[in-house]
Amino acid sequence: MRQKWLWTLIHRRILISLLLVVQFAIIIYLVFSSSKNSMFINWGLKAISLLAALHIISKKEKGAYKLTWVFLILVFPVFGGLFYLLFNFQISTRKMSRILSCIENESKPLFLMPGNIFEAACNEAPEYIPQIQYLQNFADFPIYSNTKTKYLSPGEEMFKHLIEELKKAEDYIFLEFFIVHEGIMWDTVLDILIEKAKKGVDVRLIYDDIGCFFLLPKDYPQRLEKLGIKCVVFNPFRPFLSTKQNNRDHRKIAVIDGKVAFTGGINLADEYINAVEKYGHWKDAAIMVEGEGAWSFTLMFLQMWALCSGIEEDFTQYYPWKKEPCTIEKDGLVQPYADSPMDKENVGEHVYLHIINNAKKYIYINTPYLIIDDSMLSALTLAAKSGVDVRIVTPYCWDKRIVHITTRSYYRDLIEAGVKIYEYSKGFIHSKTFVSDDKVATVGTTNLDFRSLYLHFECGVWLYKSKAVMEVRDDFIKTLEKCYKVTEEDCKNNAIIRFIQDVFRLFAPLM
Image (cartoon, rainbow, N blue to C red; front, side, top):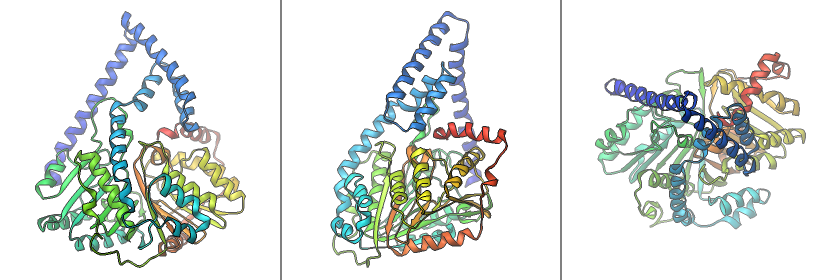
């Protein structure tokens, strides 16, 4: 199938790129041509830059964002303000925000259909009341009891369990992924989806257009529809100078009948299960949630489906325990959560900060990217200075050269404060996990970088004393055996490399 649509895919990408280049060339010509109009345009754009800089300074925004944009405007006084407007004042983005807000407000009460155990959870985990309260009472993601979890790493383990659960589906299968790429993994999943659709199972897929930009043809949803699979594309890419494209659906969610759900770092592509090698061994992680907690992921998917499709439906019809209660035995406390760039509330970041600030003995972190702002850097260094054993594993083999150089620029500050940094020597670690004090952990899709923390749609699961907490910890300790510990000496780069790192770090909010 891939050979048939490969040329169509390449043709579309080339056309879009040419259209973007033409638009940019027209702007350049208008500004720098010798016509009288260009002079007025030049003055007008400089005035826009000045007003934009004043607006940025007055905004309640992350300091790193402010610094980056003001610096860009100073360096490029003609275009800086225009680019800022393109990044931050998109009418279509505001429309998306309004629609999503309505969908979330209408479906908010449904998260509590399994029941409200907030008080019982607070009594069970009194030291984590701020975390539980923030997610349930402010972010609107309840905590659940009758749920069991299983940590799955590497991707081959997640793939095995996903296939087993997909084959059990009776009512519906909901899939939402950043990347879908034909190969062993997706082809195996697709065969099951086709078979289930023929039997009347409601099968749906959401994928991100940028994530699949070079991987799937434009008409792929129509091709899946012919196979009985409903499909929508999140935020389709348009060939216009617009930065609405910054907000991507980076979530990875699989829901089977509302009773079982998966999330984590693993996309539907062969490198995630090491069927092909891209950057050495691919170390990734996911979590399987079975029971009441899976309902939360069902609603997350349905909210995104409503946003992408524009179709209104009764979400309660998908609740799996209408006739009989959930029989899954309790395995600690489970609190799934999602993060949206539309509401300016950085849920993923706050979950991480709560875990760091609450740690008494240790915090172990896996992340493919380590590009953080002052608040996260301060929290990590303060924890280490306070005697907490803080360890972070990042990749040795990089997938994005500039991002990896920027990641390494943070090592020296962290190591000087007592944080232990390791690089996964066997290849690329894509896991996004935190675990602390043998009590709490989170597994999800959120990287420790600006794009994941502030610009993307993300999700994860916060866990308290569930079986998966210790599985995350044990896997981290085992992973350290395949890592190189970075020393202060390793961070003593020459002046040129340090200058390059500092420059990249200045532009980190745009990476």
